[in-house]
Image 1 (cartoon, rainbow, N blue to C red):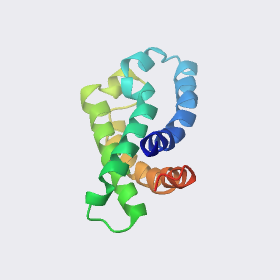
Image 2 (image 1 turned 60 degrees about the vertical axis):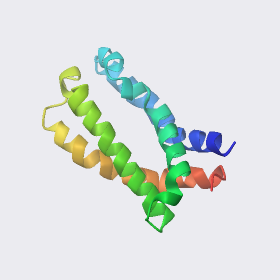
Image 3 (image 1 turned 120 degrees about the vertical axis):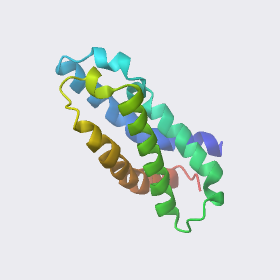
Image 4 (image 1 turned 30 degrees about the horizontal axis):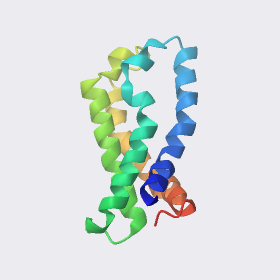
Length: 132
């Protein structure tokens, strides 16, 4: 039951944000991008799985502070996700309104953004769902 709670706690934030992001793409006339970028609609599930990975492996990571440790997991997930979307799915060619310079923001800025999202938001949901 603890892993199910961790899964749900991890997927709440992207599950709330993704419908707005998908609606934005549809309103911009780039609805075809939704089908070509699987991490866009599988993002919430992957966040939940990553939070379960955190719960399982958190005692083996040598970072003492739980908040910083969870933030580090967010950075790693953000970097992996940005690299996969940038290099494998080439999201700038799928979404023409994004310039190629947007890849730099994705690889540098997205992990930093996820550090704070995981450190504060996912940690709060983990505490609310009593995962720890």
